[in-house]
Each structure stands twice: as structure tokens, then as C-alpha cells.
Amino acid sequence: MNDFPTAPEDFDIAWVERVFAQPAGSLAALEYRPVGTGQVCDSFRFICDWRAGDAPASFIAKCPSADATSRAGAAMFHLYDMEIGWYRDCAPTAGVACPRPYYAAIADDEQHFALLIEDLAPLRQGDQIAGGSATQVAAALDAVAALHAWRPAGGDWASLRWAHRSAGSMVIRNAMPAAYPQFRERFAGLLDAQVLDLGQALVDRIDAYLDHEAPSECLRHGDLRLDNILFDRSGRTARLLDWQTVAMGRAANDVAYLIGTSFSDPAERRARERGLVEAYLARRAALGGAPDSEAFWRDYRRNAFAGMIMAINAANYVERTERGDRMFAAMAERPARMALDLDSLALL
Image (tube, rainbow, N blue to C red):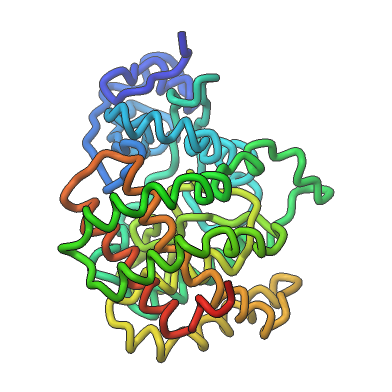
């Protein structure tokens, strides 16, 4: 039996009072409504009517998905465990632009958890399907540069057990060849033949892609796309959400994933990407160190497939929805165009 609620209707006033260290009877009422478009878990905004005290007037609660398929997929890939680990062990002190955590706990089965985080309204979620602006992408890259530059106290990565649990490479190697024919059939009406043929070429070279993967160098977000970022109206302020894929990895994976999935117009992405990468590297340098520019650009080109790989694999492990299919199609199509422009297959 968990000592925390895992569904919004189970949030008890007395439990919320304890989370925020408020006296019994200080919370007069608690209301909630769904927020976000998450595929793996369910999120809710709670409105608090405090009689007194200094607790927040609202907070966001992330709960296990109501869909059994999504919960099982999350447990298989340790997604809930990684997000809880980030908010519990790193977010309070890492200096990365993300919501402040109030409570983070997970059960041994990795299908039940409770996560309460700061409500950052009026910042608004990006729109993966519509695409974003160069200003938004630059702001998100600035935020993720701080993540890539961060190191744990004493440099002890081993202390972050959850950061080494990503099953990404193993699942990609084992699952993609079998998953791709289903993906191709499912998305044939949303993606053109050139994109689908590139997907097959990637699957045919997947061992080469993984066998020449460079060693991990930092924590990477792993799902750095517009739906997982909050922006202000100007697009110049970004806060990173959905830390369910945070793990040790390559910085270029996040950078290529974001740029590759964000621009609805390939011509704009082609015109902007070099400048965006250089600005990211300048930010890394200001934070105390940056990769070699040319080596990073090669790594960036190779990781152009990151968004496409995520779309092919994730589409099979979460609840299917109409919006989800349009989102996965955008996540596959845009990086495919980038990979073609950058001749990324030549690096495999």
C-alpha cells in the first residue's frame, strides 16, 4: 500500500497540508482539472483555498496514466523512476530551468508514483504539431545547456542510480526492426514515401548507428520537444518539463532532437540551425566548458535521427490517440528532412 495518492480524486486535504508543512485545517478546499497533452502520464492543476499560511495557491500533480498500456510501457523503460529521480535528487539544486518540486515518491513496481511540482502559469506549453519559432528554440537550447553543463557534487555520476537505467539502446536495437513495418503501415497516410524509405534505411543500419555511438558525457533530457517545454508570450523564457527520459547520454542528442522536431518549415530550419548550434555552444562555454565545435557538429548530424527513432518506438508503447498520431508523424517527418539535408546516413 502506497502512502501517497496516485489519482487526482484520491488527493486528501490532510495529505496536501502535510506536503506543504501547513497546520491541520488550514486548507479549506481543493479542486483540480486536467492539464497538458502527456502520452505517458496524466497531469492535473490543483487549486488550493488556504485559510492561512504561505503555501502555493496552485500546484501541478503528475499521476500514473489511467491507460494500462502506457503504465506498463513506463515501467518497462523506467520512465517514472527517471523523472522522480530527477526531481528528487537534482532539480532542487541543479540550477536548470524547470518547475520546483514539492513532493516526489515512487513505488517499487515503478507503475505508481506521486509528483507535485510548481505551477508555472501563465507560461504556456509549446505545440509540437504546429511547430515553434526560432526564438523559442533558442530559449530552450539555452535552458538545456545548463543541464548539459551540470555535474553532481564531486562528479559522482554513479550516485544517480536512475540516470543509468535508460533501456534506450537495447530497445532500439531489439525492437525497431520488428516495430518499423507496423509504423510504416500506420503512418502511410501521414508521411510520404521519401520519409518512410529513410526510416527503412535507418532500420537497416541500426546496428551501425548504435555500435558507433559515442560514450555518455552528461545528463541529457532525452525528449526535448515543444510539447515538453513551457514558454512565455515572447518565447524568450523556457522551462523544461517531462523528465521521464533523463539519463546519461550525449548533449548533441538533445540539440538535434529539439531543432529537428521544432520547425514546421524545413527551409527555416536549414537557415537557422548552424546559428542555433553555435549559440548553444557559446552558452556551454560561458557555463564552464564546451565541446569542440566541429566534433559537436558531426555528432549533431549523426543525431538527426533522434526524433524519428523516438517516434517509431514510442508510438507502439503508449495509448493511441488522433493527436498522438499527428504528433508522432511530425516527430518523424521533420527530423527525416533534417537527416536528408545533412546526409546523416553517410555517418552510419
